[in-house]
Length: 146
Image (cartoon, rainbow, N blue to C red; front, side, top):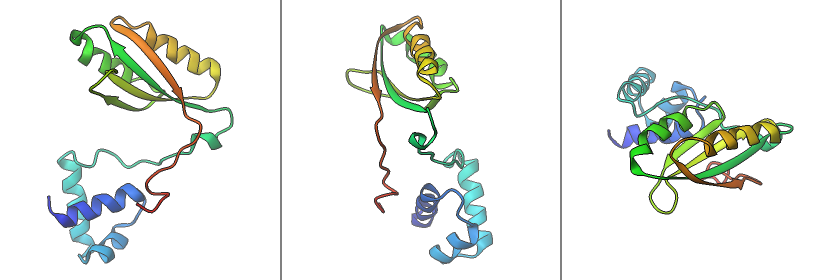
């Protein structure tokens, strides 16, 4: 991976819908070269998916929260990570060091749906504790031009 690949990745992170021709113009390569680099990055598992970042606060009734999860014992670490991260309400999932073992960003369309997701996670065998952090607003690096 070289600096051109990193530039392509940076541009895609800012706008997953950017065209290969716009990237090519910016990095000084032919469109076919950019397309081949993107394909290679996908094959290598560097680019996992192209996605939209949604401001859930603009979706009526939606709730976004972070749930911090502490597990009872390290023997649960992989099993619980697989179970929790595969829930359709989980927007992103992080394995951590420190006081908490995981943080899951959860999106639910209602408080009742969030409550069900929360209970489901808290009730899993091996979960010692959960802490909920409701997200009041979001600012991304892209919004700040970083």
